[in-house]
Length: 475
Ligand SMILES: [Fe+2]
Image (cartoon, rainbow, N blue to C red; front, side, top):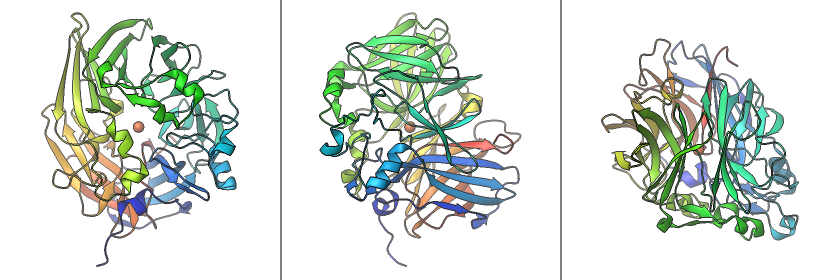
């Protein structure tokens, strides 16, 4: 058997090919009831003709669609046809600032920036997440420009701004959904900066506006039935530094542990600040769940002790096959809204990132049982994520899916038709197999974490971020 290629060479440091394939090879039996379109967003192109990008979060975005029907799978891969991608391929160079890479100085003289939407050269490369907002299918990033696409062909339909005509802000790629609303957090930069919440499904004025001197880098926010939760670790930026823009966007942020962690709780009905909690420093990309219990607000978070994970995702770190990723864990914060006391506890010692729950059934509901995420297997903790983990939030117990030389991406839970709970269904994940130098769509039984079926694509898929599944009939 030949030696497996490195994860880095197949999963990061390359450019994805586009595909439109029908009936890709399937091993195992896909459940008859599983009929729908699984669409995942993420990086597709790291190497431009004249420039290699610096960070996992920098690449030109590509969408992958796996259409599952009658036990068969069709596969499409297509780059997100945004202006950033078009210029990058035409000019072989970066024209817009990405997360941790700036264009070269001659291009940069027009003052491109990651967060200043009034400037003509803002990036519109939304390569992080997928969401259906109203009847529109959107590719979401952290800049204000979001791309609407056709879910059947992945072709671009148009570009949308979360806050039309606004100036100097960034947003998250993780809106929260409730009834017809799609709430999202916006960080507005200025001499006075603000955290604001908008409804992307019903554009208008901000639902809340919290002044902040040094905004944190925020990749998401929390939401319970009554409250929005802005959980800010001390990876902070002084807004004036963004104005001068001497370094790429994220490198204007500094880890300031003495500032501690700060959690703002905002009343959803009034938009007013309900409480503010100070806690030990932490860093988080992803919220997991939040709900109220009597006078307590409970928030589950995928968190780290510091922000070093951001640096570990630079390509110069990931190209080391024995890179040691900081271990994110599932943590629970209990905030008493009357006494203003806060308590933080680690639910499970298992490594988890890209966490998902059965969102439709259990978001804002403390009865939820399970989080699913990518992980480092306890017996193989070096290199890139090599397992899927399932964590019982009630007991802290964890179980894994792991296969040698395989790197599974974000797991997505789909309930079975008569599903009783959040392990009654399947888990879907795109897995990179470095031994066979290709990727496959894997379907696991969520109860046992055992494989049911896999559908293989002809080449490795660059390791990506977040997906959504749209049941047949909904697309
Ligand atoms: Fe994310």
